[in-house]
Image (cartoon, rainbow, N blue to C red):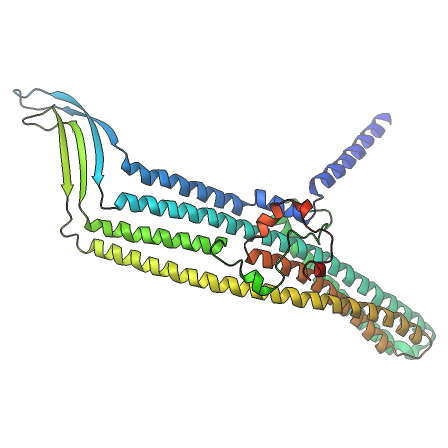
Length: 434
């Protein structure tokens, strides 16, 4: 008996410790969740790996400027008896004197692609920060909508039970019970839909946080930084320092280097080599210095085709830059409009919810004394649920639009990683910009 009590006690303690450690590990607010995604999400790590590869490629391109030292061994065996077999070791040094800008353009192209990789890292970080923010906010939104849907279902259940008690006394109220039953079933369907949306939002946030789902949403009103006072001021952030524009400009520079590299195929190349002569004949086994000059005369159109390809890629990169500028402007203005609209909708939704809540209490009191019909009560209860849901959606739309504005200006991830204590926190969002 004592052993059984001991084992049960151990299991209880283990369970309590597990709950404690779980709460310590997964109780994170919005900012902490975004920082987790920025440090662990595979897309971030992949962008870092690609950046490392691009920087290493610079060394590969620059290596062509350095002397190339090689060694080879040649064993010659002859059938003729009068020719001795021999073994010749052949160290060789080769140095490029002139490449027609082929090496230089390759280096410039690698440097431009490395710069593009740095900007791509910033782009990826902003994308991940926005996805994590949207995932966290939508998860919190779904929790709130499920709460409202469950409350609405409970109210309809209570009304249905009240009507059922009336039908026990007055069978003529049976039609009212059918009406209440239909509304209750509709509320139950809405609850099921909200629960399905919550499951989807939970899975999405779990993916962004690598399985570290928070216990409850916290810090939803955390303001990572201030936004400009107007859309026109926000548009000034879309300049050459914006990561997406800077990335595309680096791609243009890489394309220009590609044009120079393609044109270098028309140019002569000069190389100097110094090594041991390994061929039969005079001078075999002696060290020989050679100057090699190669002039392309006819390549079957390869150089011309390569140049045309590089020029077309350059034009494509320039057009992509124009598209990026237009797209960024559209995204910023759209997010700004959504932000302002959500602010107005949130204020209106709160007023409507309070009014509808008062109407529900009033209509129910009047229904009890026969001054209101059941349909009036059911309609105003449904209106309360609709207004409350709209108000919740507007609040979360406002928060998400705020994050999208910062993402459109290329400052979202940096703002999250900056000192949060210096940012206005736990203030109503409508007070951020006056």
